[in-house]
Image (tube, rainbow, N blue to C red):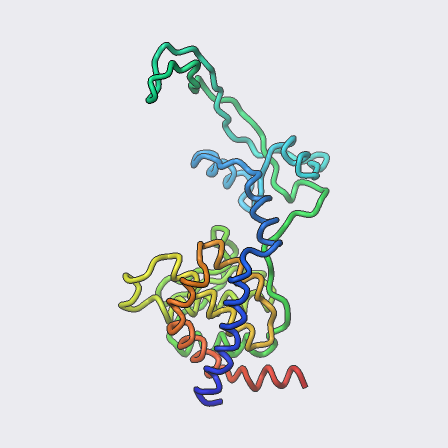
Length: 277
């Protein structure tokens, strides 16, 4: 496959992703954000307590909050202890910034223990999840790993990555163990795109939002060329980072260049055509 053919394939993917961004957030993303919004933001101390007691926790809430979400704590489950503030209201004779007398002031007078439960400790209504990748990359995943090595990038697999599925560390890529083949393919392309796009003199000129948009756009274009379905995931991911059509177009040349290079290096046109025949 020559470079013109790779660019043509890249442009088809770009057009599809732009159309998805123009449509706005998907219903699945809205469900996911609504679910996340129901949880309190915990202090640094409480985050440490959660991590020490339940390292694999993903979504935590109190007993009654889970009931509101249509889920119930399983019998025999032990709660995750945190510290909840004891708040006292007192009358104040001071005035606020508008010159109005403040009626009461909230102050923390101490702490009490409270208990949370991870979603894995509950049963009930389905928990909305982030959009996923579907399909089977087959031997393309092996090709991608080989390509990563050819660029001089070290690839390793970790049991935990602090909630992330992949990390790029400048010449090193870490991937979370246990991902499906399709998800691993997409995440690995995303992290490799960071290596190709953002470990250069250009990095200081970009923001994190731009870098995540570019990497995920490359991931979508390449996974699409590989015959995988990840449009909703990529569109949602970009919008979670505040990306939109205008930001996308500003980065278009960089996205096209790297996506076309990866597509050409793995001969994805041939692989995709073989799957469809």
